[in-house]
Amino acid sequence: MIGQCARAEVLAGAIALGEATDVERDEYRKHLAGCASCLGALGGEREIERVMTAVASARDAETWEPDVRGALAVRRRTPVLNWRLGLSGIAAAVAVSLGIHALVAAGIPQGQPAAPVPVEISFNGMHVTLERRPPVRHLVVVHNVVTLHAPVAAAPAPVRAAAAAPPARAASPGKARNAAPATIAPSRSDEQSIAALRTAATVPPAARAESLALFPNVTTVRDVVPIGGEAAIVPQPAPIAYEEGAAGTTAFEVSVDDRGTPVKCTITKPSGYLVLDEAVCKAAMHAKYSPRTVNGRPVPSIYRDAFTFRDGQ
Amino acid sequence: LDEVYLRADEAARAEVRVDAMVREYQTKIARYVRRMVGDAEAALDVTQDVFLAAYRMLKAEPSRELTAGWLYRAATNAAISFMRRRKVVRMLPLDRDVDRGEWRIDERSAASVDLQAALARLPADQSAAVLLTTYAGYSSQEAAAMLGTTADAVRQRVCRAMRVLRSVMTEGR
Image (cartoon, rainbow over all chains, first blue to last red; front, side):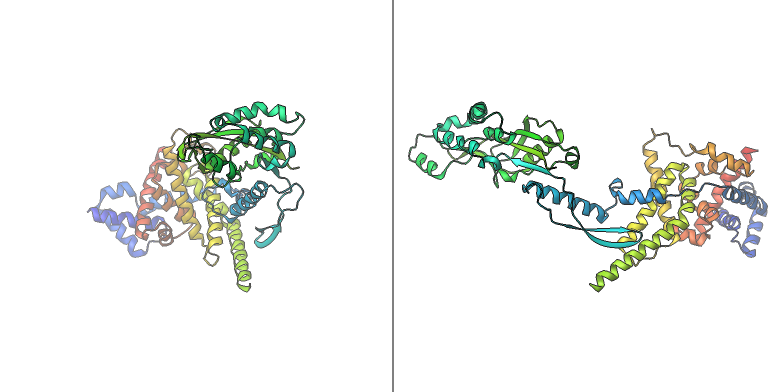
């Protein structure tokens, strides 16, 4: 009986959809004649048709006619909103943005024309590949090392390196910071003042290392450096930094353990823009370091450095 | 190079095809989804998701055919997954009958049935079956292909949905 009732449901559905053949209607009628529960639950053909007419009139009474084309166009233009969309648009946008960052990180001077970036765009069903030049707006990042070519800043560093006794060098950044006003005119720009923040003996001259080796009692110290040099730290501020025209100098220190892994980054002098500080620390934490060694034995240490950002406009 | 042009041409034509589908089916799909989820705002979102998926699909495979069946299948799945998500986030006031007030007006004026009240009581597979057939106008065979089941199963679901509709109609009297 249960099987027949299930079959009756299928038949009732067919009748509801207007798909039942005469044979099927007949079969349904016969089943209902002998099955009171189905008659009560499903109703006769007229009853089924009455319900379906009600549904049809509810459908016909519907007046809602939304137009999603506008919203669709917006969402297609800004696919970031939909995490599942791997549209090439995102890739293109990211590529352009990375390109700008790369140019900035490479210290492209202000005003030099950036290379055109091919961008694939599509609109109204057409696919066009255009060469779009990235906006000229860019942020100039000045690394403290880069600015050392300035004669005022370059002079004191070698002097300190030669004069300081090796154990004292660990403290040299602090000393250097204190010494800065004496060696650099206050009118000098940020990037020169941060030169003073630089660890004096980051890379000891080869000749000096050799001479130290002649004295076994002397402790040889090689200070912590980023692998790949200071250029290995490439801050990439978020796009909002460009929009805001963020500028300033961020001084930071990174705790590096004895294996050269950055453990913690601290901003010692904020630039005033969180976005710049965060970019610097993020880059610093991404870099790999060669740990400080004392007599060849790696020890945890702190790497200090600074970046100056200038609005390239 | 020819191949590149051909492919670009194909992609452009595919996009035109989706545009045409959007024009023709947006209202149908949106109404269908609104009946499924019981919320106009959510229905618009889901409808957009469906068409975005269509654009994406044809972008990846321009030669693929885009049918109304595909749209309805995508809409059904999107609506069901929307309802599942909503079930998880119960704190949001998004119960299925939240939008009923406004709908009752047109449905009462049609002197028929509070369809949404009935649909809110149905499991998603029965709602989909009844909406794809009576609402969207597909045969049980076509609806079965969209829902990945058999025509008989669709008919049975329609029948079960109808029983609920009937009880709602009787309550209303």
